[in-house]
Image 1 (cartoon, rainbow, N blue to C red):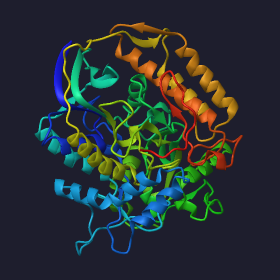
Image 2 (cartoon, rainbow, N blue to C red):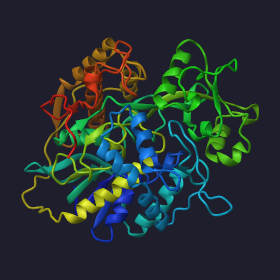
Image 3 (spheres, rainbow, N blue to C red):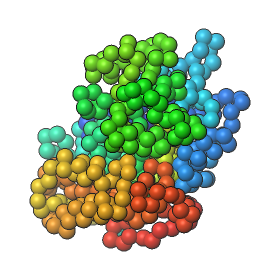
Image 4 (tube, rainbow, N blue to C red):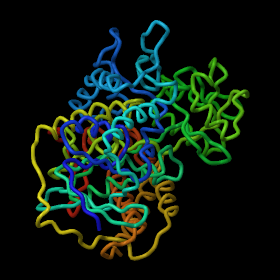
Length: 517
């Protein structure tokens, strides 16, 4: 086993993680772990832009209200205000790093319109390649500082006296590394890769949630998983995402007969919140109707949306016909590791940032283009908090390893995905959720402990653990709110307003409605 030591260990390579590392690198020794290549992240795949108030006739309060409405008022108000007010500064920091947002001929920013925003306030880069260019820009900075260690999969956080003091990881050759760190930052993304139809990078399977849970951190709002309505369908499979900006440019959702799918379903019709649109498309498909984006009204489509154009070309979809086949799929995790307004978890020395964290800003349903914004805003908050808290870790007295839990029986990943899809999907009910809980917890009851098990065995256990936590949370919330839709409880209930279902190892805490610190 190799050992190394650093001031800060960042686990994950999306915008939130590498931006935090960049902000800290001038003052701290920083290491970034990524499971595969640095580009393997949801941020890199993000076609949508960054929502931010950068126009004189826009206001943070309007953006704030849009975010609350999309989140079905389950958002944490103070954190949400922090998000939208911090938007302009986050954009400025990115520009200073070399990011070039799309501009008009007169030098002013180009603004896009997306679902549930009351105005066009979305900044993009090269049309629909915002995430790629953001990551490429910040990536050059962190690589120049030699911060990145690719191919390191973290399998367990290192604990001492209730504090996080590092992490164990495995590389592609099976070699283990113990990394001691004064501060550990989880930036591993969400869990949508646990669904068979999803928009995520293949590495996004909820391992950060499992790592935090095993370390004793508090998790919350795990029942809220956003499904994006317009994943590209090619040869019966989803093969990428069609950005919401396409509908912002005037595309309409229609069935195979050209009939509007969103007319009469919501006042905003095709620009309705994602949960609404996803359910409409899901029900249409359940009744045998197919769904398409009618793009015939968009001029210069290939120029405005080069990434979508390339995806369609790979899928042998002829854009000259004017229709793109789409279907809903898992996209974003609103809940996650409970953090305060500076990214600190309930475990000392452990932070979380980006999609793996539950800052409370997304509520029950994320507003379009607020995810990259969250990464930029809270990366700064986490960095400032760490810089103001000086502490170090001593390697002496820390056990190198102990046995870890794995399942006693082998389990195929596809079977896990099937349970997520069939019982914890776009529409849920008590019977299905009870089956999911029973299935996941049945495997967990047959847990065994091994020293240095295989990476596959560790990850399978993590996937099942996350499945049990999500299913149990979804079963307990007996209402429908935002992305969490129960056919047996189809309405929002005042009782559940601002109440959060929390999970913590060995003690499931009661639902609370207290404000965050």
